[in-house]
Image 1 (cartoon, rainbow, N blue to C red):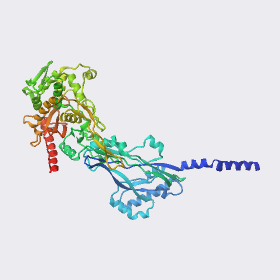
Image 2: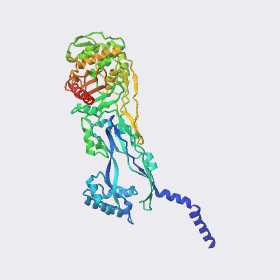
Image 3: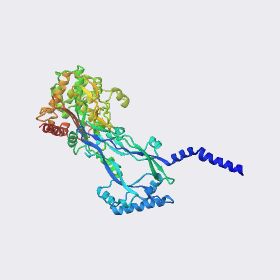
Image 4: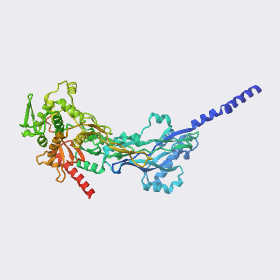
Length: 586
């Protein structure tokens, strides 16, 4: 008997004293829970410091379930919480935003955390709660960050939007409970999500035997996200979107000297504020089913046949290859017969003898059919490739299209056909299989304006961490110097000047009496041949002598030509831009 008692006493000593430390650590591990704490998202500003995306406090009411703990099963605690919610709803006059089932689910899955029962409350409801809060110690005001877009739908395609983030594998492994962050879903919010999101914090909470919060052991504060400064000028962005009002299309304005994107509009647009914290199903369905595709960023994702705005590249290629000079004259009889087919000028008009500048001014198709054949497609292809066509520009936005620059091998592999002179004729006037984006055309216009330097379009010009007072500049990137001869470029630039400044120019409706500008109009057929569906284009740079702006605009469905439909809109936009500059100077 004494031997048995001694053995039992030894075992008890071994468990309580000998291994007591190990059991204590195990108990601590089981009663401590790690909670991931969200951070404050960084802001986005335009080049002049105007906030495009920011945060504001969003107030709600939450319940601390450990204050309502009642002995017995979970249901009594849930019932008591539900009774309190109904009483608060009666006093504040705000309908409950939760149900008894959700309270039960919270107790089962997230018991140690406070449960939000009202979100997005206005000041009147908060004032009513503050008056009676002392009688409800288990309820308290909760503060949540809310993403706001002060300019509404302006630049929505560029800024993008956020949604509620999901827990990743690392989060699930490192934390027991996850309080969701905002997560960028589109646009700059998505591309720079890591920079804007910052670093989440964490807390250690001790729970009791029932699983309710007992105490908070420690906390690691979240690190706020960094800010972005964009190249966008909100004034120009607003003018670009106004120029497209009521139409489906896109407009891009860039600075020829560094590639800064000053404005990028896609119509119709959307308000990014409606996506956070969540978007109603019926609203999402309406956006997706809208035939105008408001979520589609036409400026970078839309691939279109360029039409006649591609003709300046044909002229540059021919001049550089020595296949033409400023004095080269070709005759237009209204059409060109080639291989049993007839390639006509627009409307069958015979322009007679023309040089390059005059052919650009009146946009003669026959001239460029002949010039393209003289130059040869290989030279055109390599010139277009060097000018950035057929590849993405490198803009830091999601969803950019590369367009399509067809090659001879592409046609053989895709269509099983050899390249023909007719294909070269089509490309020479911006038709056929050639596809470009408005952004590509704006950068091409910028290269003509600045003497042949092709920049990577730049949206972000500065970044700032939360603990910095000044933005760190992001330098521009020169993709390549095209080394275009100044004499050759002068010929093309003169032709483009006549397009806008001469009464016979196809883009004269965009002209301004006080500012000399240069441009090129274009009209491109799309859809089934003979359907009559066409898009209107115009590229432009201004002022002519010292260009500050390079612009591309496209309208998805033009009733007439690019000069007739796009020209007046572009002219009005440029008039407002220069009028604002004069007012600022005064």
